[in-house]
Length: 400
Image (tube, rainbow, N blue to C red):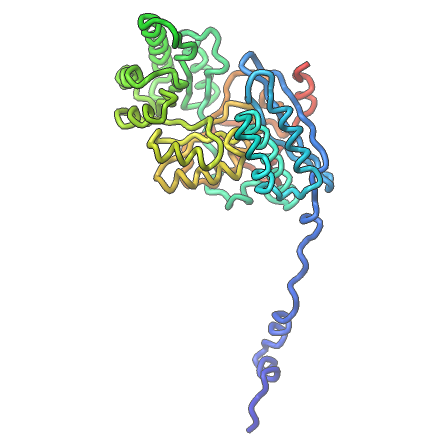
């Protein structure tokens, strides 16, 4: 009996059509998405309070799709605006996926100009991921490996909104945050430390700060209290602060010193978790911080660290060292949403910062309006970041 040839065998087995399909070229990719390029930049500068403006870049493309990011709080006078213009000129006419290319181009500027440049790049990067998600028809979190959680826990940073900045003022603002549904608040009661003053002046300011912590702890009951020391202590005074903070059962104590060596020593001596890293840019700086043993909890800020992709990389670094991440971000709703899209898929995510009480129109800066219920933000399923800038609100409160 003659051997059955391959074609007759496949046909007899009912596999002929499959074999034919396998031999055909795969369908062509959607070239429309691949060919979308950056065409325009708008910058919205929104007045918030004496502690800084919100700066929102909006990138436009050849497909008519735009995206937004957060480039706020780079310094007095918003020096990031000039860098936004410079970096836009680099990416103009290039594809919306050229993020790592742009990162390489701006590294010298970041090394030279610091936060003004890193903040500008981060804002543009967020906007590009917003655009990518919209064009792909998926939420931006799908571009980072999908999501592990539907909601993102937030703590209320009351430091930027409290006035007067005394024990009664902090306690009152903490009470407002609790009424709003938050079960964790953060304050920085040692701001204004007279570092060049006498030992007695520093001690007096420290006592006032401790009084603020005590008042907030009483106002919070068994809810969580987080304290940011903003690097105001040397090693000796920092170790002394640990003892003063122990009775308050803190969720964490943040950045007691500006020295990595001192932070490592303070972390080892601390009875409570320590946190930090909000000002660091990129994987390299965060790796140095982690390997120094500077904190138990890493706090990359999506506005400063290099954007959403770098936040993901930094979180993976922390995960490798067994550390949780709690992204810093006391800025606009845009930045919080961008961070939340990354946090949704982080195995080692802990909690996200929310700037509470600065304005009574915060939620209206984006459309749909920001919604944080019971201290939790829901990450929706709309394409991209799932939000648009409410231009009416942005222009109403625009910096003159």
